[in-house]
Length: 495
Image 1 (cartoon, helix red, strand yellow):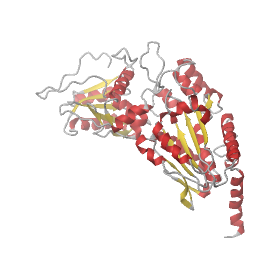
Image 2 (cartoon, one colour):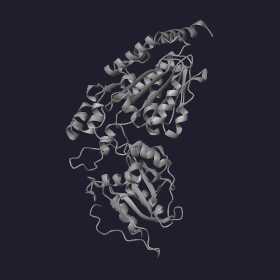
Image 3 (cartoon, one colour):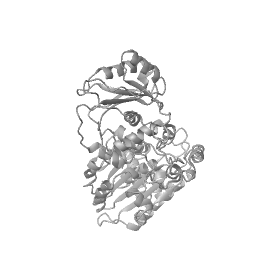
Image 4 (tube, one colour):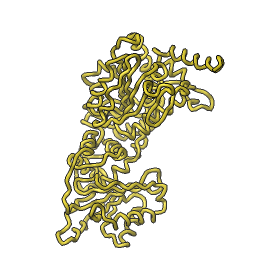
């Protein structure tokens, strides 16, 4: 290979060497900020809090003075913020910086749910590495980022944060380089995973960083940012109103709607913990336990089906089954919204569901989300002889005074059920169940965050969660001994 072809790579290697203790300098040099026609044409560099965070990391690298042999104290950092301030970008920059400046570095990236990890956190790593000056050195795939010539010793990989997967965080050591961990949306990650990751911080020049909205007033992330361990982690708290990247009009709308000191604004805007125990309506631990739990089902337990409709939008139509405590045995049916612009498609599919036997059972009752044109679909199904179909209006009054609307009532019942029931380990269902926050209510009723607000903060509509919640729309009695179904109530005022 000629000198001309080697020189550019050597120059790039020299540049990366100069950035070893200068992550901010790396970020400014490695990406084409403000380049006309480029993906960063409208940006001149990191935000103020991002600059200060990167500068602090650089100072600690210099202070520790790792010599390639003797291990040094881990570099730690935690960021609790409101929505949209650029935490995922920061996580990606750190990955790019460490991988580009430290030969044979080894890293793990995780997030509270697999969907968050795959579609947000790791997607950001892939996107920024694709824009990085050193991108030609690496292979960036869905499940691994590695140096082309050192696949097994110079890499970073995404890992599920499920507690039963905690051992995947063990055994990561880089005695002559950097072993690093990045936790995104860390408030929902169990203490067990953090404890195992600590074992990878004993050699070399280790680093660990936590990012998230502090949705809980307990757990490792809360202790690192606001509790007993804050001196160890040196937390940064970022108010969304102070970030140059956030939608200020949307933030003001939230403040006007919920109130400056509401838990919603405290967590999603101010970056501080909720006053209540959890700003998430359903906590991650409850979901994890339901995924592992084994349950028994009686032979006469009625099979109930919930159907969340998309009607041609970007969301899915989702059909979920529940038989008593078991919402795992029968897999969900998912139909893309784009395929159901013709209502007859769903009529045909749901009629098939009602006609079949599922693990020896026929459907006792099917509850449909009444949004859009579910009414005509329900009417057509009944005209076909399926009298066990009922539309449910999510915005109707709740039959229970402890919940504000019908949707809140169903989710409240589902939350209680999760303490005893069993669900599958599907990442989409898991993400949906922990996604909605709660809104303040003067009468202390359950009042979930709206789907519109969820989408505005970058969270998808909880189609799978709503479908399962629909199975709790009304109590279903055990069928009579003679095989006849118990009639559905006639006074469903809330439906």
